[in-house]
Image (cartoon, rainbow, N blue to C red; front, side, top):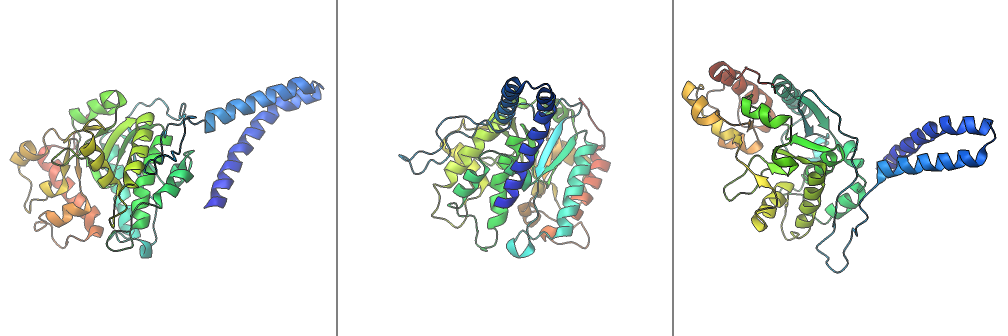
Length: 349
């Protein structure tokens, strides 16, 4: 891992060296060495500040062992580009089967990602799948990952540490990309005017918003939006919360996100714009009344692991609640929903 990071940094510097050489060589040919040196140093300095600048506030607090990250803010100016369509991220990095217990094999993961991309594209959004390499671009990746070693992430099975660690690291990936919208790869849009209105401009002036919450206000990190600064703020807050819960077998990013709002109701904005998948898996064909009573006004539906266990799958032939069946179950439900609720209509901003 260290060698890979080193290689990435070398490529960044190499790119800078090539850019600078185009300016420096003509000056050397004119024998104006001093002026050439000044210009080269200026260009390199500006390049390094733009790429690697971080807030100079103190990162570690020896006087408080519970607080690891004081400020996750970094300069991400220029990473976002103007777009004609809204954009949403998801995060996925492959984990060897013997190091996870998610129930998803490689084919199921690939099918899920393809379906996620297709449905969001059909709803009028551009999609980007982030991975661990994006998270590594964050200037504080190493410090963040090192601090995660203190957090219990194995779970009862003892095999899910890699998966749960990635769930924390994805926050860095979205932050370094400039913030914006992010969803789990098992969350799908319900195209509507409400969704399109919220999509092009970040809601709530870029303040961090979680669109799925439980009773009591705790957030489920399946659909979120916020500015780069807000993604950085929440990443640090989640980690600080997590390292205070070492007396359990698992403290996931979801547990940390919920706990943050239980401690402070203003930690982020929470809404109920996402339907839990269990609420739409009703064991029968979808009816017109369901469109109004269940899915109307909602932004998305979340087919989580838990949704398959709690939902009624009796009307879907040949499948059970095994997680690897999620792509098939999701596709079957969407076909029924679109035919019944006229959900195939695309509302663009």
